[in-house]
Amino acid sequence: MTTNNELQQFLNGLIPTDWFLAPVAIQYDDDEILVVGSIATDRSIGEFRDSTRLDRMAIADQVQAHFARKVSWGVAQGDVTTLFTTFSPPLATRLRLSERAVLDTLVSAGVARSRSDALGWCVRLVARHESEWLAELRSALVDVERIRDGGPTSK
Image (tube, rainbow, N blue to C red; front, side, top):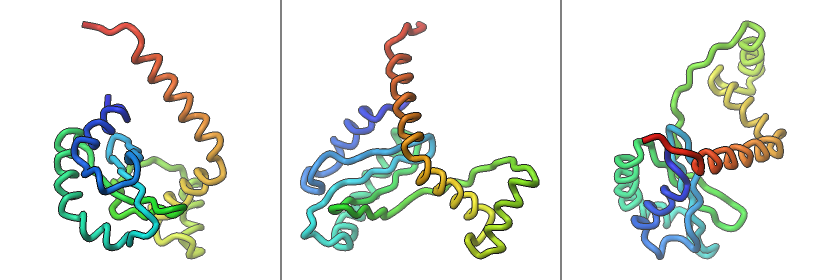
């Protein structure tokens, strides 16, 4: 199981120290690792993106080979976060007629382009309105992982 600390250490060895103002923020799941670094407010995001593209691609290749996940990049500049690349893997789901009707209503109303887009819209809506509950749940999962890591190991 990959840990944030493991990813942070691996990336710290690869990312040039003059790219970001602080250690990068990392989010990850089984499919993707998102790396976001803070840059100075007087620096152009576009210039940073262009000037680091080849190096970011090389770093991503190494991270992908080691962790078997796609790597996405972004920068934070003040209160604004700009993502350069993101990975959107297809996810299969089973929905009942009434659940599909919700998605189809969003598509028919022009809120979403497709069922897939509508499902993403629903997930973003839950994340926005239930962010406090989701943060509490994520915190509890970190505690579970910490306790699990401190438990007995099989040999």
